[in-house]
Image 1 (tube, rainbow, N blue to C red):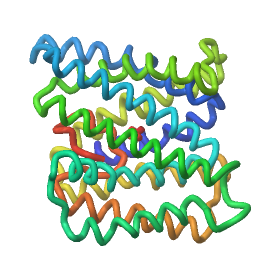
Image 2 (spheres, rainbow, N blue to C red; image 1 turned 30 degrees about the vertical axis):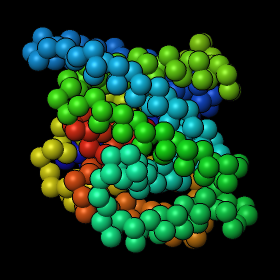
Image 3 (cartoon, helix red, strand yellow; image 1 turned 90 degrees about the vertical axis):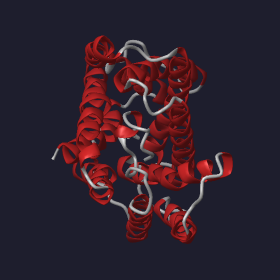
Length: 303
């Protein structure tokens, strides 16, 4: 139950960001900043009980925070270009990028199933992005597909760096470090791109507070608490609620309706993601829990 609720919480992030109607820099900066008051007391309690991270772990978390910001900036841009639901599905292409990075850099072995499903994910990405269609969801679906893929790559690198931080790092304290450096990177990156509004107004601020609470805090904590006690196939299935939930919310609230081919593309991506994650010791797609355990490779894209 906790994992399912956490996945649904993370799925709301894209909708709240879209409703805030702020620049990617503003949305990314504030979703990190607004999470800190909720996470800091937990980090203090963790430090008193388990001690603080090593300098080595702090540096890896700081570098991961920069990549988290890049992921969130690109994903937010994709939300406005291809839509809330489809961008959430497209970011799940990281489920093939993380193993590829491990294969290329650490020489980890990959199963034949992975190589068989890799072109399926590519085809699903092309279909989901509406490359061969006109009049599909989003103002710039092809650009949104590219930005989603780049966001997935940044998230994959983020997970890869977390592995360098070691499996025994204090998770909440590391997450706070990630949020702090992500906020700083978003401030700089946003200022260099679409700009950052330090006073976005009460309406946008409310939506961004909800983004932080539902996605960065509650979603992350619930997935972290629930996933370790579940079999990997159950966890992976429940975490698919994140992109599916994002599509349902986008259709219900924003009237974003994908075409038939886009739905087929989504099925190919999510089906492949489930098959790949249940065939390895990797967690499900787009998990906020990635910052908790080994890390398990996967919201919160989560983003």
